[in-house]
Length: 62
Image 1 (spheres, helix red, strand yellow):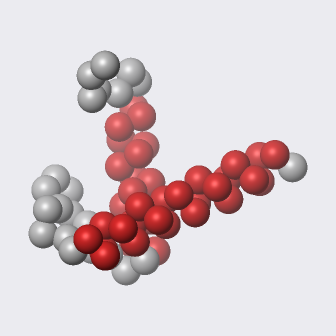
Image 2 (image 1 turned 30 degrees about the vertical axis):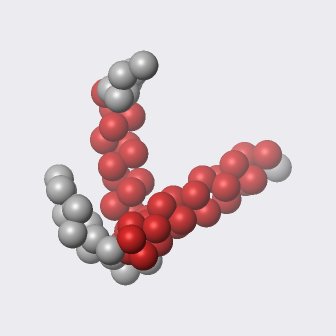
Image 3 (image 1 turned 135 degrees about the vertical axis):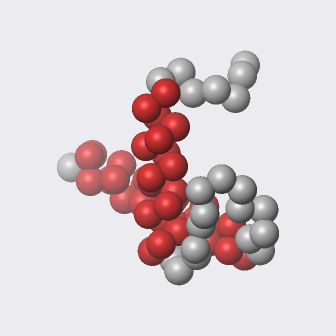
């Protein structure tokens, strides 16, 4: 299995979602390379993304 998205628009949507989550937790992401983030910062962004996905799922289940 490759690391490419089946739908090219999905990559852009996921990137916007990631940037939004980063903004909400106060992490300044740049376009492209972000390897200078600390583990704590990267984890904050990932955690916020998961929280938002769970919230969206729960709202869709109502």
